[in-house]
Structure formats: C-alpha cells, structure tokens
Amino acid sequence: MYSLTNAPSSETIEDFVQADGYAPAMELNQRIFKARSDAKMTQEQLANAVGKTRGAVAQWESGEVRPRHSTLQAIAEATGKPLNWLVNGVDDGDPSYPRIGLEVVGEVAAGMWKEGTVRFEKTYEPVATHPDYPGNGQRLYRVAGNSINKIAGNGEYLHAIEIYAGGIQPEHGDLVIVRRQQHGLAEYTAKTLIREDDRWLLRPESTDPDWQSDIEMKGDSDTEIDITDIVVAKWSPIERRRKPSK
Image (cartoon, rainbow, N blue to C red; front, side):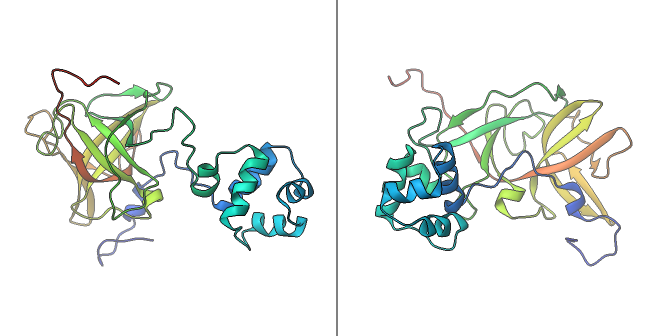
C-alpha cells in the first residue's frame, strides 16, 4: 500500500482515493478491432479490403504488429472510421468533441449537496493540457462560492488531474478534489491534504468563517470520503463586454 510517511498506520492515502468514472483510452489494436466490429466485417473481409492477409489483421488486433500509416488509412476508409480517431483516438469529426480546451466536469462548492442522479452539464474551456502529466484525465472544475477563495474565487476554474488517469497519488500539501457522499447525496470540494499526527486531514483554504474546520479523511458511519483529483493549476477567465462573433 502507498504511504507518505514511515509512521505505522492502518490507513494509507490509497484507502481514500477513488476513480471517478475514468475508463482508460483504447490502444491502437483495440481501435482497429472496434472499427472492424462496428463495420460488421470479419478479419478476412477487412484483410481483402486493405490488400493484406487475415493473419496480418489478427496481428494488428492483438497488438503484436502496428500497421503502417498507409495501411491505417486503408483501414479507416474500409471501416468508415475517421483516420484521426483510428490513429490517435480523437474523433475530430464529431461536433461534440472539443477541438481546443479541457472539459469542465463539475463544480466544487462546500455545502452544495446534490443527488447522485443530478448530472452536471459538461462544457469546455480553452485551457491547454499540463505538459507534465498525461493528457488523458486532465479536466476542469468550476469554483462556486468562497470555500476555496484563498486560492481560487467564484467563477474561476481548477485544472485537475484524475488520479488514476495520471498515474499519481496525492501527497501531503497537495490541493485535491474531494468527494463526500452521504445518504444518497454527493458534495465536491477542494481542500489541502494534510498529514498530521498519523492522520489524514482535509484543510479548507478559505477566509469565510463557515469553512475553517479540518475534515478527517476517515469519515464516519454516514459519510464516505474519497479523493478523485489533484489540482495542478487554476484558470481565471476575463469576460469581454463585447464578445467575438462565431
């Protein structure tokens, strides 16, 4: 188990981190298989369409051999899939796919409890990925209220790395996105993770007197607490009085 100190403890930070609906991106061989399956083609049919052998198709789909770019172009044409999706996993022909920017997946706001069935309407903002972390799993959270106003104010955005996608674990002093669940309700907040006297604490970063108490990571019988993301930056949009025409 992952531990941030040498002190003995029955709980480590891995006990408090949880994937938030993250599904790893498909590898090239998986995309080739999906392209053929979606086109309802057999390996033999795909092989004939691109001028190769069925054995070659089997090697592509197993990941044993990577096709040349010209062959990938032929596979895309034969299966009706966008070439960019086949090569890079990006469907830039889909109007819902953001050509530039990160997805805003939710809001962080202390005291804002929502039912699990309530879905956040996802949007995109023109924020580039952080070069030190994998692009997959980078996302934004919009700040609502003043529960983290020492770092980010209402309407600003926290640039976060989903812990499983980024292959990272929270450490003492990190600003983290925290999910608390209680009686079918969920709250997302941002707090600083603190290791103190063999305990994991979540410390508010607010000047508001309503948000000054540390939260124990272990929760209680009614509340489940886990960490979903690590915050690596913030973004502050400035609205122009006159917006550009699109």
